[in-house]
Length: 79
Image (cartoon, rainbow, N blue to C red; front, top):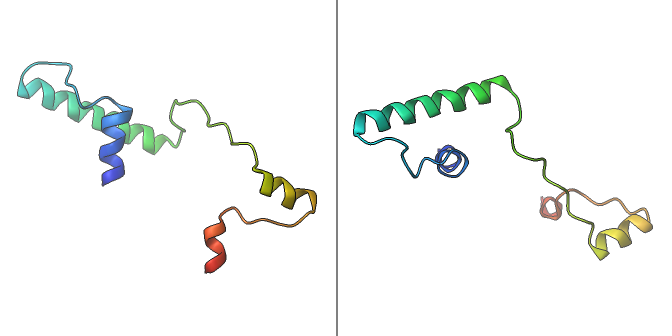
């Protein structure tokens, strides 16, 4: 639930209403919700730019040079 609210506030600008009046604001919110549902159902990634991966740290380069496998998450080691 929190991720959906966050997506609406930050991704679709729902903190500010484009129209005056409760009825018009409700219609804007409903149509935005429909658009988000269609976007999710279509399976297409959002129209944001692709994130650029960070450069490896010195420790990661050390492991790679010695061909030591490293997990994607160090937190996964404890489980």
